[in-house]
Length: 127
Image 1 (cartoon, one colour):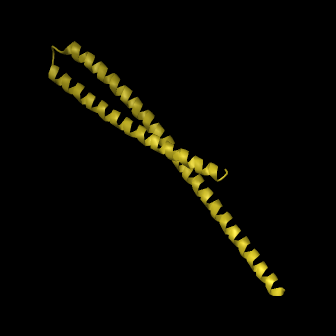
Image 2 (cartoon, rainbow, N blue to C red; image 1 turned 90 degrees about the vertical axis):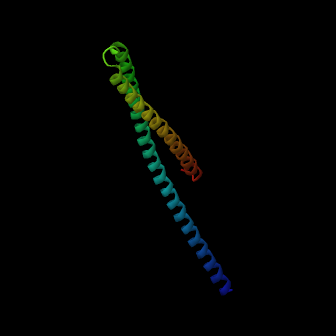
Image 3 (cartoon, helix red, strand yellow; image 1 turned 45 degrees about the vertical axis):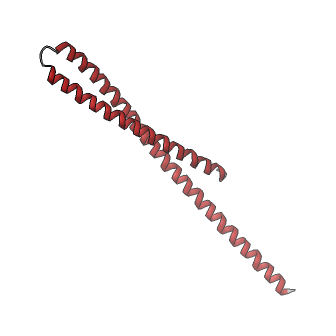
C-alpha cells in the first residue's frame, strides 16, 4: 500500500508543480500583454498628437495658400511669375502635409485596431 500512496503523492506534487508553472506562465503572459497594451496606448497617443499637429499644419498651410492666392490676384499686374511660384510652393507643402496627415491617420487606425485586439486578449484573460 505504501508504493501506491507514494506514487499518488508524487503525482499530486507533480500536478501542483504543473499548476504553479501554469499560473506563473499565465501571470507572465498577462504582464506582457499589459506592457504591450501600455506601449500601444502610448504609441496611439503619440500618433494622435502627430495627426492633430499635421491637421493643424494643413489648416495653416491652406490658410496661407488662400491668402497668397488672394494676394496673387491683387498683385497680378506687378510680378505674377514670382507670386505664382510661391503659390505652387505652398500647394506642394499642402499636398505633402495632407499625405502625411493621411498616412498618420492610417497608422493611428492600425494601432487602434491592435489596441482593441490587445484589450480583447486581456479581457479573455479575465482582467
